[in-house]
Length: 145
Image 1 (tube, rainbow, N blue to C red):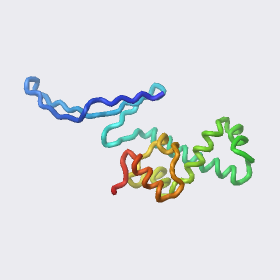
Image 2: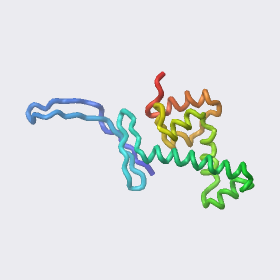
Image 3: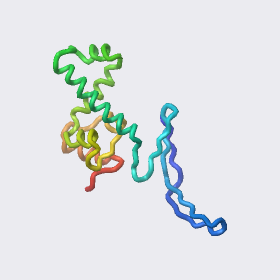
Image 4: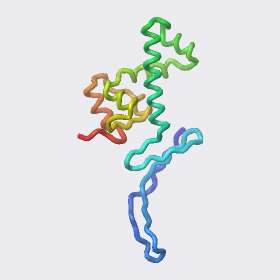
């Protein structure tokens, strides 16, 4: 379970008595499995989160190739062999339906797309033009309009 906490608003104060500048930046602290990640207003995402999406996309391509090549007759059979559940396989395979430029942005860190695995596992449109609009709204750093 992830715990997300928003802290304060962005402010800059000069504390004359202490001769200090106090800067407050809103951040999100996310804890997953004992590991913490900090998200800042400019949308920085941890390398682990980007890597998780990359791995899921690659795994999705691998699994769909195994099914297309006839090595497995069904997702259930593949899930049994891979020791995972069929829902995960189906969601990862769906990632292979992303527009080529979105997949390239995920795999090669090109462009200004910054998406997380959580964003991409939710339902998304199948038309590539609609996907670009959909993910531009979800992206932490969206492409310029």
